[in-house]
Amino acid sequence: MKVSCTKENLIHGLQVVSHIASKNITLPVLNNVLLKAHDGALEVSATNLELAVITKIRGKVEEEGAFTVQAKLLTDFVSLLPDERVDFELQEQSIRVHAKNSQTIIKGTEASEFPLIPTVEKKYEYICLAADIRAGISQVAFAVSADESRPDINGALFSVHNKELTLVGTDSYRLAERKVPLQAAGGDHDVIVPSKTLYEVLRIMGDEQGDVVITVGENQMVFTFGSTTLISRTIEGRFPDYTQIIPKSHKTHVRASAAECAQAIRTASLFCKSGVNDVTLQFIPDKKELAISALNNQLGENTTVVHAKITGQNNDAVFNYRYLLDGLSAMNTEEVELTIEDRDSPGVIRPADGVSYIYVVMPIKQ
Image (tube, rainbow, N blue to C red):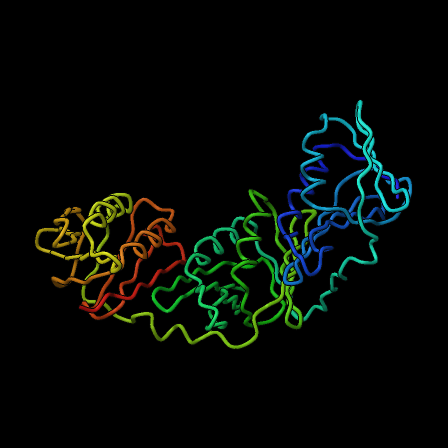
């Protein structure tokens, strides 16, 4: 293997994949990245056996070949090199690196020791804009359950129907649903995507523009964007029928400033009961007021009034303030709409700008 590339391209590729390579005592080769020079490019990949990331780096390939080296060592080393060309050459069990005023030998492991990254046989494929899938994932991933005893909700539902992708995350205390339009779709289906995969897609995608191709196979799926491919296992099983917990009616409707509501909730949260995280929302249509309060017998109490457009009946409910803040911060809009049936029913928060996103939060029953 003999290849040359710029430091800028190389460090970007290493930063994309090296996050996947983790400290693994039982299988040390998983701490490595695989460098593969072929087809006129340098391919860099890493895997933890649940996820794999492959990215292609532009460069000049003089001799094809493959080798693996420690991900952290190589990334840290390359980051210290001058911003010029970097030359790699495989010599026996090491890579010789040439850079300005520097020659280095980095020991590694034969490519044959690196786990085989599977090729996913396509069952379904769909295409969406990077901006849409980025917004969709970021608006549901935080609601996914971390409870390993419930694997069916340890990931987000990706449900394709009529050229529309619906993403859903829930931990049984709150639920987030976002609909994303598709540029193309190859059949209706459902799949559960692990939480770690969601965050890795967001991390790697960054501000990527253009199209994202999502391929679904047997127990695996692939995200392809730019020169990068992410392959992930999917979660077996069936996602719960979440639609039954989304209220179909309401008695009170509120439209208010998201920032003002969030500020009032943060203030009240200082006085909520320890371990309960309870804040009370009172809806007063006649005064067009949303009163947000908390009471702690040891600390004191607080009530903040947010002026809002309120229709329907007087109402009140108690919610976990953390869940409310999570939902409000995910709205990405100046105003939000909140609807509620009664104090024992879930509250529903939507962005007021009409984006296809809803956030459902269960009340704390007194």
